[in-house]
Length: 161
Image (cartoon, rainbow, N blue to C red):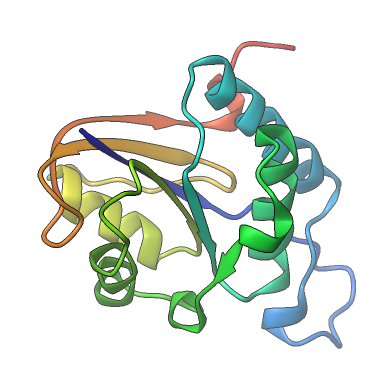
C-alpha cells in the first residue's frame, strides 16, 4: 500500500515586506509546528521514503525541520520548481513521477494548490491550515494514485507534548 502525505508549509513570517514571496521564512510558530507534526507522524510510524518540497524558503524550512525529526538525510530532500506556487496538476505530476519503490511520499507545498489537490484525491472539500497534513493511503502505483483511506491532521488538534 502506498502512502502519500501532503503537508502545507508552516506559518510564514511577514515581518520583512521587502522580501519576495518565495523568500519568506517561517515564523516562530512555523518553526515549532513542523517538528511537532513530524514527531506525531513518527510516533505513528509514518516516515518518508522520499520527501519533495517546493523551492520556497518557508516550504524548504518546513521540510528540513521535519526531515531532522525523521533522521531523513538533508541531501536526499528533493526540491521541485513545479510545486511553487503549485496547483493540483503540478502536484499530481510530482506524485505520478515518484519511483515505484517509494512506499511513503511526503510533499511539502502551498495553499490553495495543496488543499485543492487533497480535496480532489479524497473527494472531500479540505482547507489545510499551515503545517496541516493529509495522510492518503492507496493501492496500486503512483501514476494515477487512488485514495482508499485518508486522514487530516492539524497542528492545533495534536496532543500536547
